[in-house]
Amino acid sequence: MIQGSIVALVTPMDESGAVDKESLKKLVHFHIDQGTDALVAVGTTGESATLDEDEHCDVIKAIIDYAEGKIPVIAGTGSNSTKEAINLTQRAKLAGADACLIVTPYYNKPTQEGLYLHYQAISDAVDIPQILYNVPGRTACDLLPETVGRLAKLKNIVGIKEATGDLSRVRTIRELTGADFAIYTGDDASSREFCLLGGNGSVTVTGNVAPKLVHEMIMAAMAGDEATALAIDNKLVALHKNLFIQANPIPVKWAVAQMGLMAKGIRLPLTWLTEDCFEVLRDAMCQAGAL
Image 1 (cartoon, rainbow, N blue to C red):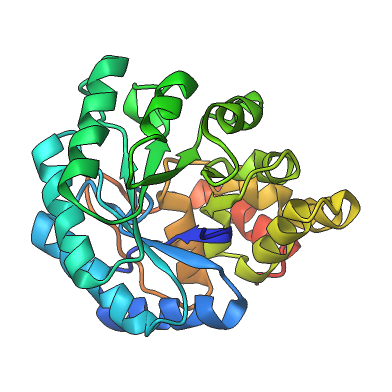
Image 2 (cartoon, rainbow, N blue to C red; image 1 turned 135 degrees about the horizontal axis):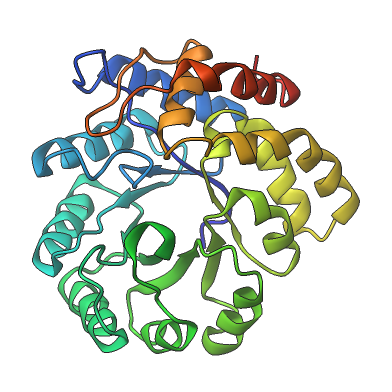
């Protein structure tokens, strides 16, 4: 089971919006050096919605190559088309991904049965560990715990990224799945409490900016060391909040650029962080020791 601080890696781009491979390599090595436990390649924070399919798979392959087996790489392979999600998952397996993170179909608003059949089709088609991803605030679709319990019985489905921020779901999902099923949070603001309640880690945006602190906080929380986890998390609270001052990944890409790890690049319809947000986000980075 992959556990700990799992960074939802941004995809570096130049000012024209082209993927910047040199900066991507630098980022992967940065996270290995800082103790990040795993990387998500081309998740929603990695701008999966605006990379075409070939670019998407090329970036996943590049991250796997740059990681050189030193850190697990989880490929983002979700889509609102079941056929496309299967294809992306197959290509990620061929590229050597350790697992795939598959977001619920966005915009379509499928029923719970539709969600079950969607994930069942991907599980049947591709023999690779698959992690469900529930983020109804972005997809308009909530994968309910009871459906997760059904899906956990399928051979390739090994965990869930639960990004509702609802801490009660940790216990509910655990009871419906079992100890071997990985339960990750996708909500940085409540990640400490989530892991203290028995979560297996965090798929984190904050970890892009303060990877060492996020790793230490998550590991302390998973070990039940509430005092240490709280002390570390107090340094991260402002980042957890202000990295979402505009739509993700706008603020986090600005922050990573401020750290000198990539250029000023993002794809439309997303735009670069507006100047009125600079000061509050810079202050949050300073509190976390990122600047």
